[in-house]
Image 1 (cartoon, rainbow, N blue to C red):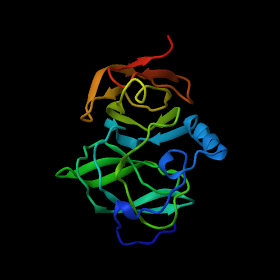
Image 2: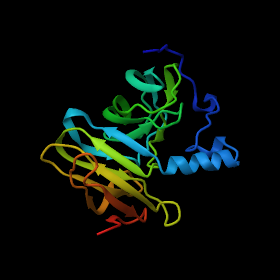
Image 3: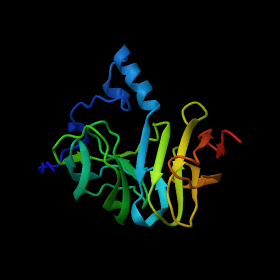
Amino acid sequence: MTMRAVAPFNVGQIPNVTNPIDSSTNAANTAFVQSAINASMATKPLALGGAGGGLYSFASLGSGALIVYGTSGGAINSILSVGSPGTGYKVGDLISVVAGNNDAVLRVLTLSGSGIASVGILYGGTGYPAFAGSPASRASSSYPFTFTITGVLGSDATFIVQNGTLINGSNQWIINNNTTGSFSMTWRVSDATDTAIGTGVVIPQGTNNSAAKFIQTDGMTDVWLATT
């Protein structure tokens, strides 16, 4: 494992990060368009661990947290500390570390007020450098097309996707629920307050992606099965 601590820096001091998810730092050339297409069709694995369940929200409204982490082979593999807790977070919020390919997924486990006290790693991501401090002030992206979820559910799990307009909030995903445990997994859409609305879709458990479901949302009212 390679890691070293660095002094916290403000969001305005973030080095330029080139990746297909953060389009504000990229020119719209052919290479960028192709990488964006590749990212939109990507698969993201989420490992819930041995006591999965509760809320998993892609619609976090929190900002300003600084997560100090360690890496191995370009993936985040340890959380060393929370350098700054930020504000506006909820337990279960899924957040991204602004570095590498911005694809790591961390879950807020405990709070201090509305700031982050601790996080867990659901996916270590790719391309993360060996430095150990980076703002995590953005919600984790639900950009990939396929999510493959593993672990043991110790209680019902609810995943909340981001809301928006019919133009920018509509989306579709393939969900592989490869978890075990006698509990359910439901995908729902968020309102503007990081709270689940609508009925949602229960994703059945399977093995080796055998129970994959294709779901869709309009970003405003609910999540539905896209196929029968």
